[in-house]
Length: 587
Image (cartoon, rainbow, N blue to C red; front, side, top):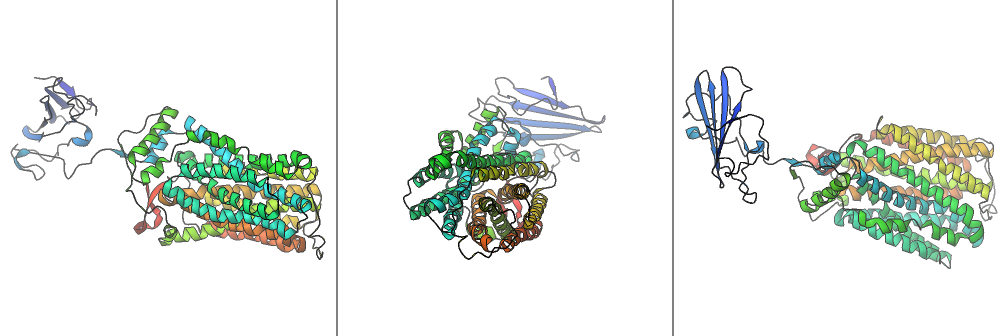
C-alpha cells in the first residue's frame, strides 16, 4: 500500500512521472467524522494516468474514476494533476458505486462541462503585479525629455514673437500667425499620428517624431524669411502633435493604483522645459539672438533619441492585436528589470483586427459619443485658457501695463510698436512659469483623493477667479501674483485632463482618442493668439472676460462626464451593449 499524502500537500507542479510514482494515495482529513475521502493517482510511466476516489458516508462507498489524463510529452512524461484538471466529488453522490454520478454512466466521472481551462491573466494584472520599479523609473526619465521638449517648443512662441516683431519689423497679426501655424500643424499631426500609433505601435511613431522634431527645429534656425519660419514651425507643430503618444505609452506601463500619481509627476518636467526655454531667452537672446535660442531649445531631444532603444513596445498594444508572444516578451523585460515574477498562467490577448482605432469608434454608442463631445469642449477651453495665460503674461509684461482692465483707444500705433522683452520681463515670466509647480503639486495631492473630475473643476474655478482679478489696476508685483496663480491652476487642470483621457478609452483606440482630443484642444491654442496678442490691445476687458468665462463654463462640461476614472483599470475593447466605454474589457 502506498503511503498516504495529506490532501492539500500536492502542488500543481508535482512530478507524477511513472519512473517516480506508480501510484499515490491522497487522504482528505478535513471531513466530518462520519465521512472519509481517499484519492488514488496512478501513473504508468507513459502518457496516461487514472484517478480513483472513494468516499465513505455512513458506511456506503462511492467510487469515482477519471481516466486518460494526458501528460505533456515534452515534459519528460510528467503528468498533470493541477487543480484545473481535477474534479471534486459531488458530496450528494453517495450509494452504490455503479450508480450514475452527475449524469454519467458506469461510475465514470469527468468535470462538468468543458472545465475551467488554463489560468489566464491580463496585461493590466501583470503590470499591477510587477509594480512600479526600475523599469518605470527609466521610462519616467525618458518620458520627461519629451515633455520638456514639447513644453519648450510651445513656450518658445511667447518669446520668439516679440523678438521677431522688432528684428523683422513684423505687425502683430504676423506675430500671431507664427503661433497659430504651430498649433495648426499640431491640429493635423496629433490625430493622424495617434491613428498610426494605434495601427503600427506607439514606439515606432515616437521614434520617428523625435528625429523629425529635432531635424526641423534645427532647420528653423536657418530661416531667411517669415514664410520659411511659418512653414518649418508648422512642420514642428505636426511633430509635437505626436509627442503626446509618450503619455499613452507611459500610462500603459504604470500600475493602476499609481497611474494618476506618476502621470502627474511627469508633468513637472513640462514646467522644467518651460523654465529652461525662458532662461535660455534671458541669457542668450540679448547676446546671440533668436536663432541660437531656437537651436538650444531642441538640444534635449538628442538625449531622447540616444535612449530610444531602452523603450519596448506596449504590451497592451500587442495584446489588443492578438500578439501573445510579443506581449509576453515585453512583460518579461519589465519583469527582469523590476526583478519581480509574472503571474502564473497564460496571457489573455484579443483577436487581431485589420481596423485599429477608427474615428467612428469615438462615436459608436451613446456613452462614448457623449464623453467624446464633452472632452472636445473641455480640451478646447483648457488649451485656450492655458496658452492664453502664457501669451498674456509676455504681452502685459512687455507693455509694462499693470492695469490690464483699462481700455485702450489706440488706433494702430500700439499694434505696430516694437516691444522686446527685457531682463525684468524674462524674470517675471520665469516666476509665472514656476507657478505650474504648485499647480501640479495640488493635482498630485488631490487627483487620487477626490478624483479626476473634481480636481479639474476646483482648479478651473480658481483660474477663472484670478483672471477676473486682472481687471483691477494694481502694481507689477500683484499682476505677477494674479498670473502666477492663474497659470498654476490651469496647468494643473490641464494635466488632469491629460491623465483622464487615456484612462477612459480602450487600448485599440486610446492613441487615436488621445491624439484627436489633444488636436481639438489645439484649435483653442490656435485661436488664442488673436485674443491674447491682438484683441488685448483693443479691448482688455472683453479679452479677460472670454478667458474667465470659459473656465466657469468648462466646469459644467466636466461635471457632466459620465465616468470617473480614479482607480479604474485600463481597458482593451468596447462592449457597446453594456453602454460603451463604461462596459469595457480589461487587459
